[in-house]
Every structure is written in C-alpha cells, then in structure tokens.
Image (cartoon, rainbow, N blue to C red; front, top):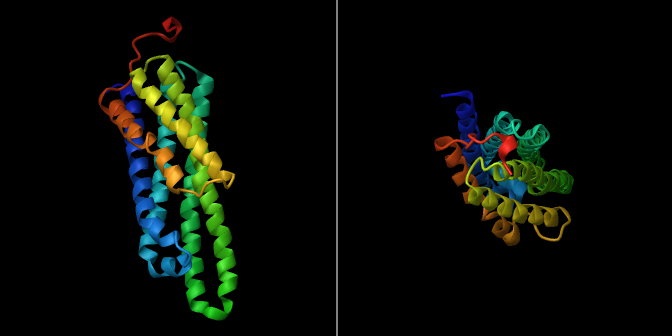
Length: 231
C-alpha cells in the first residue's frame, strides 16, 4: 500500500471513529447532563460520565487524524487549503478534548454538591451552570463551526479536482452548509443546542461522512489527473 492509500485509509478510519465516538457519547451523555437535576444525575452515574469523557478524548484524537491525514492529499492541489483544513480540524480536536475535561469537572463538582447537602446547593449549581453553559457553547457552536470551515475546504478541493465522485462532494457541501447555519443560530441563542432544529439540520451530513469515509478506505482518491490539467 503506497503512502497516498495509507493516508486515505487513515482519514476514512478516523472519520468513522470520530462519528461513532461522538454518537455514542451523545446517546449516553445527553440523558444524564440534559435535565435540570444534572448534577445529581452525574454524581449517580459517574462511570457513564467517565466513559463519555473518554469518548470525547477518542473523538479528539480521531478529528486530529482526519486533519493530519488530509494534509498530504490536499497539498498537491492547494497548500493553503491543505493547511487550513488540517488547522481547523485540529482546533475542533482541541474543543472536543475540552468537552471531555468539562465532563470530568462536572463529575467532581457533582460529588461535592451531593456531599454538601441542601444549604450549599445554590453555590454548586451556579458553578455547574457556568461549566455546563461553556461546554454547550463550545460543543454545539465552536466545535461544529470549526469542523464546518475545515470541511468546506476539503470538500471544495475534492469537488474541484474530482478526487471523489462529485455527487459525494456536493452532498458534503450541502450537509455542511445546513450544519453551519444551525450552529450559528445556536451560538446566537436563536435555537437550543442539539434541539429539534439543529438535529434535523445535521441529518444530511451524518450518513454522508460514513459514505465518504468508506469511499476513502476502499476506493481512495482519483489522483490520476495532474492539478494543472483540471478545469
């Protein structure tokens, strides 16, 4: 397997790992952290919260793998966009790691909250609300937008130079556009984070990334045409 195929496989596997880790983390974490009594729920489900934090770290590593794996593929066509795509995926990786750190911080806070009892509840709830709000703003806004900016760059290059079938790149561009619009609305407070509107907006990109990943793993990229000869 040559270096180009190794890179496409790394990118494809990283996409699948990131998607799987993020989906599982949301599925097991949202019922615990999404309710008004989330501090009590977190304290009672410490093992699940630790798993959620580990999955956030795993997703962070996978997102970095996507960016670093894409760079040598894209630099043949646009060094600037290759650096940009890798850079924004690395920023996304950092925000994912911060999300895992926030989960561990909330777990420690929740235990202190339970141990302190009712008289000091307001103090712990205030700190919890600050951590929780910051984590939601990062996860539902900043992380998604940095992912989208990087995705616009690599889907644009893949579309222009026909590195994968154009229908696959167009699917990605449409899905990313819907995701970035919903993320901006979340950051501005117009819609709730991961509410119905944002979940519907994210539906097109979720299966696209899996199809895109499988294509990279099994087909690779079409690099037979030199960049200078592509219209």
